[in-house]
Amino acid sequence: MSQPWYREALGACFRFLVRTIVPLGVSDSQVGFKLFTAPPAEKIFKLQKIERWAFDVELLAIARRQGIAITELPIIWHNDRDSKMRLRGMLNMLCEVLQIRLNLWRDLYDYQE
Image (cartoon, rainbow, N blue to C red):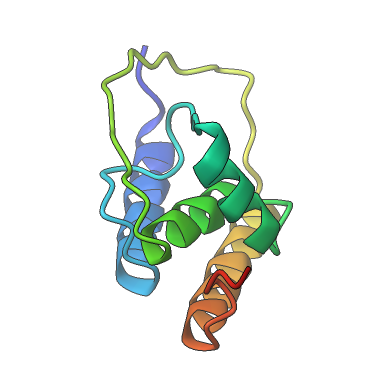
């Protein structure tokens, strides 16, 4: 079952905004699982600043900044009719994506041992 048209539209807008604000080189930062091997995970999670809405966008941005390979694999996704995303949550997420952009400009994701 697919999502209602308005959720599809909001998802497309969000994907466009993320690609524009924080280019990640992935088709969709929100769908699917994120798996890490130990050495990259240690680097990435030490640099993580955001732990709420856009944490996965940030993890992918850090991986890209660090030159860590990101591989996408296809998944089968099913819509959950009980899933609710409120406007406030979307605005919070957008604010966090903007914070990630600022963090990238400030070089806060450059790993230093």
